[in-house]
Length: 92
Image (tube, rainbow, N blue to C red; front, side):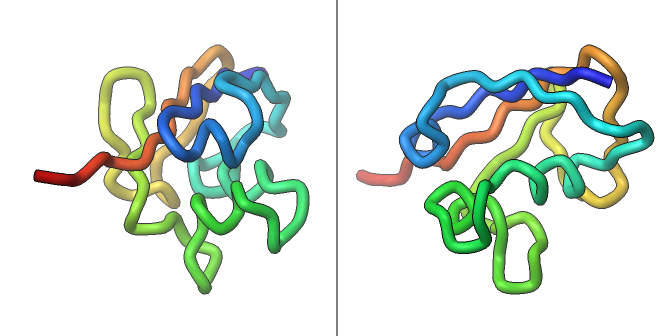
C-alpha cells in the first residue's frame, strides 16, 4: 500500500523534505510506519519521531487524515492514507 506523509515545522527540516510517499506492507500501524522512516537510529528524524523505547515521542503530533492519532500502535493505515507529522509550536 502507498501512503503520503507530510512533515511540518522542525520535523520537515529533520526529514529533509516536506512530503514523502512510501510503500508499506499491509497491515501496518501508524507506529510501525513511523519506525520505518528514519534512515538510521541516530538520525535527526528518528530523534524527533521516536522516544527511547521506540514509541512515538510525546513532543510530536500525528494526524491520520483530519484526525489526531492518540494511540499510534492501534491506528491502522490503508492504501492512500495521508499522515501529517508536526512538532507543536509553543511560546508566549
